[in-house]
Length: 407
Image 1 (cartoon, helix red, strand yellow):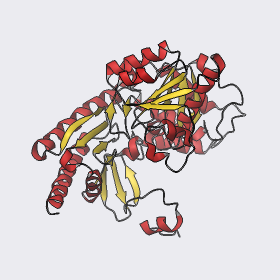
Image 2: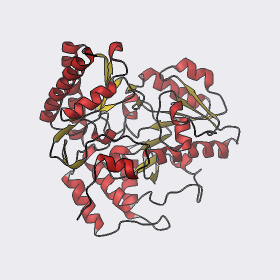
Image 3: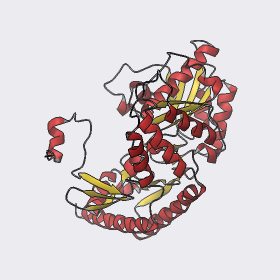
């Protein structure tokens, strides 16, 4: 008999680095989730931009079951057929010529940052080691990646942090001009900042970042862990910016919830990660690669990608209609199905209230900091679920505003 768990069990057995809600999901199908009490939720969160094809997609379930009868794991001292098939598909769809597989976005970024430094070391010398990133960015939870990320709260108490890392304001090219030099080995950026508030890169800014990197012989690294694999309406967001990075990282939607990450780059740059310089026990896991291959086979179609753009419009129209009634947002922004609605100044700091009440209304949403409601649903969420979810969100807003007005 399976032992029953409750929210209190978390406090008894888990490290307290998370603060999960009282909801205990037990089943999901498409864009709907049910908890252990049978309550239904519409999922606008997507596991933080992960379940891009929803829950229990039949094609992915079949791929997993078929592979489970064959191979679960191979060490990297053997040739891995599923990993090579997935790598070929990723290189065919992108600028890249070489792929390194990991288990997560943080690990993919760790590999990218190590590669950038190693490449500069090989071609110039140890003095060319500085990395420039942007405030409010997020690149993972390893000590290296939280240091590159521009949020000091994630490095506090873990110092000394890796050195040689600088930050500037996102979309501020003049600041970047003042920081970049011939010591810079890489500039790291998200095409659209997710955790930082769903802030898209200005097209001209992205173009000038590329030009500055070229002028200083620095690599441009795009973190597409959250924006990639169809999330913005193209397979990767860089396609919409008209800027090609030297290194790109992917995870989240790549496995639709099965742990997998990838770093993509060119043959020339990849050569600096020579034999023995980096590795991962589970990176390229056959099960993960078979599932990811099935994911990109579905998402990489014109039907799904064009559908993302259509759904974006439905969300934006719906949020604007709600805002016309309640005046709660000062900005609605984003790309594809990564959407941010920034609360007006009078509601600053109350993002958590909307997050909590949405769950009461049977809706799963996200926040990006204390002031931005973030939506990252399945890329194939049915239009009727969008409509129903927005109705639940409007009810959320009513309750939160009424509650705040009585305080």
